[in-house]
Image 1 (spheres, one colour):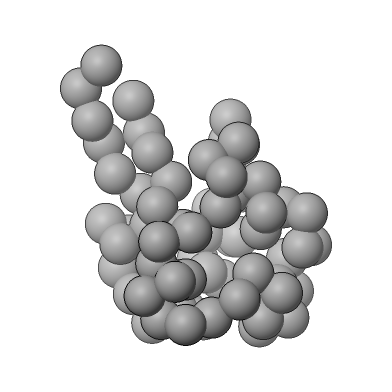
Image 2 (cartoon, rainbow, N blue to C red):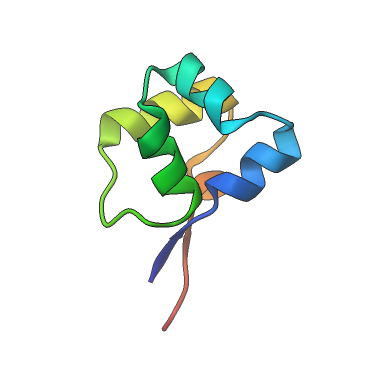
Length: 67
């Protein structure tokens, strides 16, 4: 299973979902879905924008766990 760790990353960096939406140009509702681990897919472009805005690595945002 792939888990999205965006909520905890934003908390550690003290950045709100609204601020991330502003920085990336991604709709706030999409950021909210990602933070709630409610997405079945994520566009690579969106992922790239998030990584650039947060200055982080892919492993900071996504995690693979065995079921």
